[in-house]
Image (cartoon, rainbow, N blue to C red; front, side, top):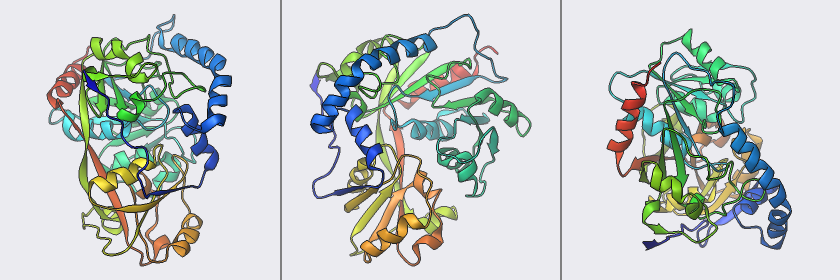
Length: 380
């Protein structure tokens, strides 16, 4: 067994600016930080965490009602922790590299952070205006060429999609705990940071469920080292989920550079390389783990001096950037693709803005492709 390598959650010399301090504090606390106040919160939350764990187990355990079967097989992509975890990046890999040629896949998404309600459909390549009614992740997936049905009622979203296209496969984004729909496969995404977090359920920790329940047909994908080869510290998610590593198939994966391009070219569907030159670089991001943006930027040769962190799925306006541009008049800006779908070029004037593109590369892609092929052939 190898000793666990812990990714640095923040980089030396990188300043973090929280635009949503309460949200940032809660995230630090459930992941084991927050100092004495965080420890006090986790202590108070432990009785509630047991209640959460029991309710989650009840939702996950098959009951008297049968899950609904959709017209095509379903593959769920989800995780066991709150926020982040690489779900959307794994969905993008499934769409781009995981499916046999000719398979028509459609996405079913909750659409977190959207202004609209009810069920809506996002067509491939739809206007950036769709981000407000559908959410950032659905629009990003539609940019990749997918049809996306959005709504809390995922079965209703599938029915809305069926009037526009015929899918051979539905990919249920963030669907691990959504058991009202029958599925052929559960893909469960983890990151190395997830596995080093305390193995406690909300609100005392980041878990949405305990480790006792295992998907009947599932596989794990860890963005980091192979969990079976690590000696996890006691009390961490990596240690608590040992049964998952041993009883389910899975593969480690790594984050790969997809190239950093200018915001203008990215929005136009082109790939003009971004260059900051001699300018200082400020990153902005409304993602679950904003520090990871600076960390990955450093890995691809971009030195970020400050990260301006917004709440996950934040809906941007020009006012969000007016003060930032004044405070850093010489800085170039970088952000993620998930944030770029919500940004207007006019907000930045002549300021250089880059979009950092990140891909997931599974160590054993053949394993995942075989599982997906079996899922497509699942009896309907």
